[in-house]
Length: 200
Image (cartoon, rainbow, N blue to C red):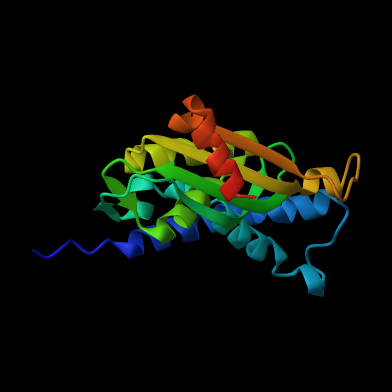
């Protein structure tokens, strides 16, 4: 059976239209900050910034089905599977500043396993949206549970937040760790401890 080819031109056109709409907003921002958008160093900055923001928020235009792409396979594995140190970059919804960190995911397969690279794609799906870290952690855990039908899922996210480092209290060494446990990783202290031990 021949699968339909996605119409990539539609996505490209939508991206181009979005970038064209955002570009003058960045130009106005530069003016309001006291800059001259016509000076040499800033001539192309509004469009570059619009392109960057479009990319950094591409998770809004993706779905869980698209990023996992059917990579769920039958398996007799029933012991804890852990994927560590998935790096990510996200944007704080309060200040539009980055937060950067790593995500650890563990799950108890229940007849199905997910292709390894898809865990990173799930993380990026939600990280490439305006976020708070607690919400990001919850979304990743629920997505892994939905896709795999796992008996339990655990997610730990640790990140440094530019909104705390570059402004406000300006604390350079503080990081935030958040966790979500679902199913047996929430109900079983022994399984949860195994997961925590594996991600140390």
